[in-house]
Image (cartoon, rainbow, N blue to C red; front, side, top):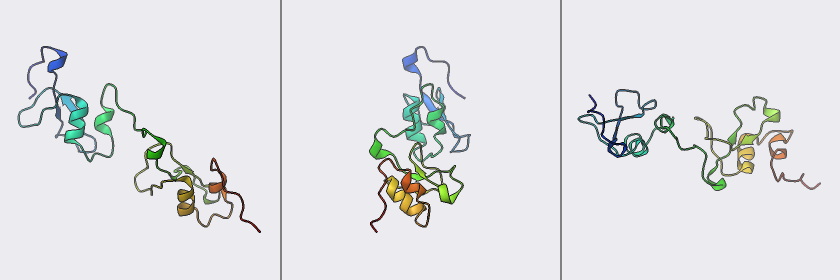
Length: 136
């Protein structure tokens, strides 16, 4: 069981909640015998759940970090999950790449990879700097 309440905020430690499924687990305040102890919840999440893809541990923080990349270059392009119609489908880069989706470095790479046989050209037409039509 966790130890007694700390005497000050600086004394608070965090330990991993190994009793919960890995993808849903977070870190808890306090200390527990036999479990690692961390000085902050962020350190605990990084140390105890380095391969957690759900983000549940960080999401459990009072002020969770954003999942948005820090630079435009870090953003990956992927097929828009809401583009159900192939003829009007596009690619987006406004969030984490969904599980099972291919990540591309550019919008053009995504359009070429996901919509190479799209006759309408909707994916390429939706680009900020859309390519012009091929010369005739």
